[in-house]
Length: 272
Image 1: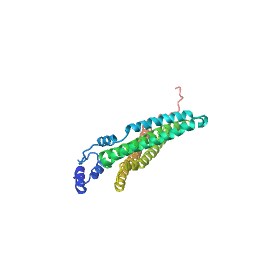
Image 2 (image 1 turned 120 degrees about the vertical axis):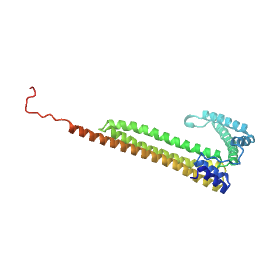
Image 3 (image 1 turned 180 degrees about the vertical axis):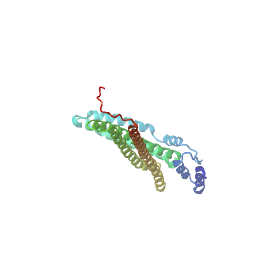
């Protein structure tokens, strides 16, 4: 049996590219290959930021906050603008332009550092993982919150009609599966939507970006589909076992009823 590490090393020998290492690392984090990349991401970022006017960026941010506060305070009823408001509004827009320019320069420095590290580096893969799990967690929180509200409103509705506890639990479970399906699929779409922005921040080539997008998109889809499938199969299995237990208890109750001795009234008065 050929191990995962042996397969990854063979690919590395055939293509002789660090990208293959990172693709293998994306799907199999336990496979670790050595790459000639010696500089760390933090070191590259620090070197890039040393050449950027960080103080000017901080000053532009402070000026924007001050200008926006003064402009909002000068507005009148229903956001009307009169008196000193037009002048403060113009100062706010100028501060906003300066801040946007400083922020663009700052983000460009970060992007240049990412470009030197590479999209398929461990940092690029780790950032992609963090973004996916962040979206995944938000989908789970949506499903849990929605299920809680569904259970509460279904419970209120069940009080107004004759509904058994089993029927209520079944409806809650079905809504839970639906909520998790909607939440996780929405999280996957959000991950796909933000993935291309992450790829462009590394200034990767078109083919590298498409290749990475397909790999990361398929990995995200496999995780979401496995989670939903496991949830559906686990719920179906639990309901099947509960149904079998209920049927067995019913049969056992019928047997006990048939085996109990029957007392026949022989026509005697009950007071004898």
